[in-house]
Image (tube, rainbow, N blue to C red; front, side, top):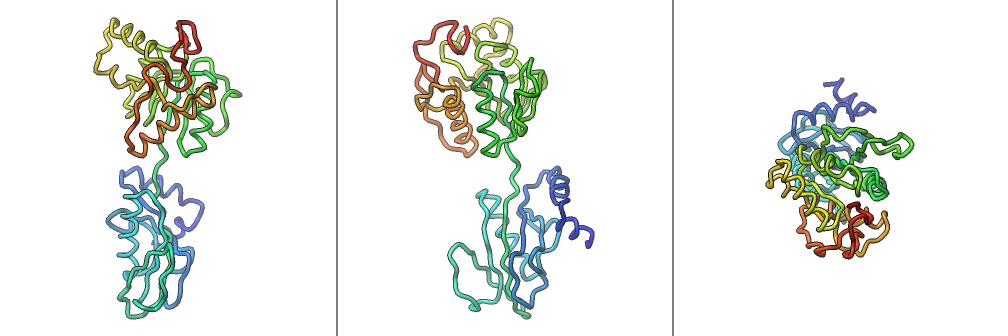
Length: 286
């Protein structure tokens, strides 16, 4: 146990968390930030907590643990951090933003504990080497997505440091896949996306263009049910024109999907800056 506590209170915490997370249980990190003696937990003590129990580490004795587990369950359900206080009833005034838990511990003492849900970052794979693709990668990385930019011909200098790079569509994966090829490698990117287990696939293209691509892929034997997985036109309607605005529109849609919000339909022939009057050979390719 001492070794586990040492690991949890050192830089190897991320390694410990990664190993536990592979077992599939969502976890919260509990950190003691204040202790009023007598308490067995001290400031800086940490523990990884599931919705059912303390998994690893130390956050005080049996008096504090039920409150920590309950708070961790709430944090995992809501995705939001919380600050809790555990101690004898009636010994302190309520504080805004702090959730109080009464402890029946005979020794008394109070612990203030920060509960943080350790939620894995969603994975976004952007297929394409267009300006919109690069802008989407940069914005998504800032909003907490783990981002990969995939396209043949990519060069290292083209990709920001926080964005992973692949030059082969095969094996494309991610929670979200956005096809931003805009005229180059469209069909190859679509096929790779459809071969993945992504929960959400979107393509930056007009309704007219995506209809043509679907018809073409149907002729090659691609199942229509598979093609129905493609959400296009991608993005929400904000009147986007520039590549950065297009990326913002698409990312807004991804955030809404991620948070489980209902989507408002995009105008029939305009999405993410693709003009309704687009003709073959336009900004998204023929």
